[in-house]
Image (cartoon, rainbow, N blue to C red; front, top):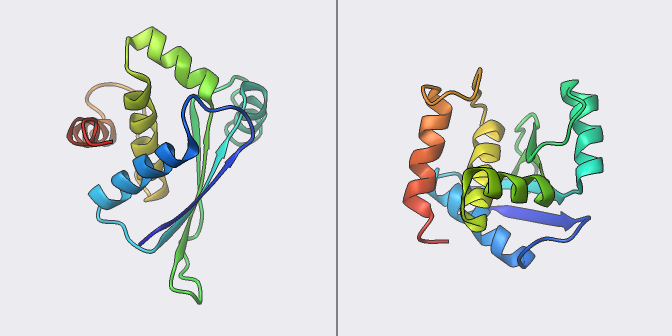
Length: 145
């Protein structure tokens, strides 16, 4: 069992419970248990500030991941970290790539969780191992969530 806390600070295109189901499906697929993940739904201005402060990129982005130390808490859960989603940027992705909204949210959930688990990528090319793995997971889950 995992704990997911979602804090919407801006409107989402679907109920928060649906994002929770997406995140739970990803964690289950990756065989991750006893994780605690905090999720913030932020507008473009807020995620831009975070992106500028933590990544030195002065632009909004679709998702940010903030992994934590992964230390086991007294209750047995591991605080894995924080994910920040931006619905405005995700909607722009959907238009740019002609992608279904839920599939793009799933893709970014997978991307964020992979980063929380310690995986990284150097770029965004099709040959990046993490991104290949991400797309495999998206294909396996997109008809289930």
